[in-house]
Image (cartoon, rainbow over all chains, first blue to last red):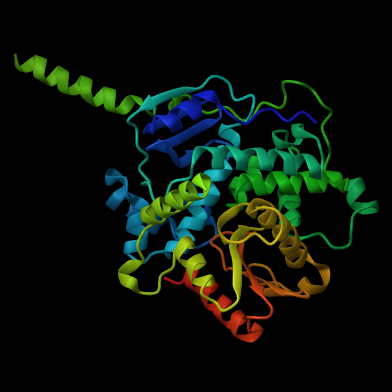
Length: 260
Length: 154
């Protein structure tokens, strides 16, 4: 199987320059602080707020409370720990889980052009950073893991279609809980990412479960069609994340000019 | 030699970047938890691993086989087999895996896995590798439970 090189020259350069800002691709965004990755987000992966609230660890209200109190200072995570809404370990587990989950999609080989906006910080805050080679290495390891399970990358983005015939005849008596949960939500329309969002679990977990279900013949394996393997595209607003400081500067300029 | 020194430097920097436990109240971040795991008598290596993906959330000490990444991926496969095993999960309806811990005894070591009550399903386990000649299995299991609880205790 083709293993595309994981290393992005641009990312390596940014790490070397100890850059702070956001790396934008069609599949999501990677936030750097001092050249290391502190946050990642992708429309294909549930955010940390989904992981924490869907599992019942935090109520949506507790989450909003934290964002309102500390989001503007880029310290939501620290606020949650300091106000004893969540343990430091739990927060780190969820944060790292969400970071690598989103980074897998951001660093996808066919994620299109890459741009970087200097100076942008993420509102969640920078608790503990992950070195760029570690993030790239993990994304590559994940791609290889999926290949060994069932080498059909089209499954990652295609709607998950259950095969009832397979379930009736060849289906195993025991289906692990994670796979059963994904299969229960497979309706021929939802993608693995959509199912992961409904379950409030990392998107990569859904990718793993779908590959296993397909290998068991419980889920349809799409025919290989190049071009279908494109990961989910980010909405247009994501591309304008970095514009905020510029907009603020323009507003200040406008106010200053009007005063003249 | 140079590589070793650089690694130490990086580790120290990352430890500095970790949040401090809230007023030393026993709240444990990942690094703090792993540092404590290494104080269990006979400890040779430890890791915190997500078992569906095989992601190593944190590693410390020696790697029992190959490198830490390999150990994380391979112990994750073992943890998954345990968590999803039809015999161990029979009749289990509660949240999280039915299995709480797994112990593998080899000629010269103990390999302990403790599932952590993680914020999301398909979560994580704490892995501790001990030198059999120096370790006390019963005591190590008690310490491992305390460490796993410390990760999620508010």
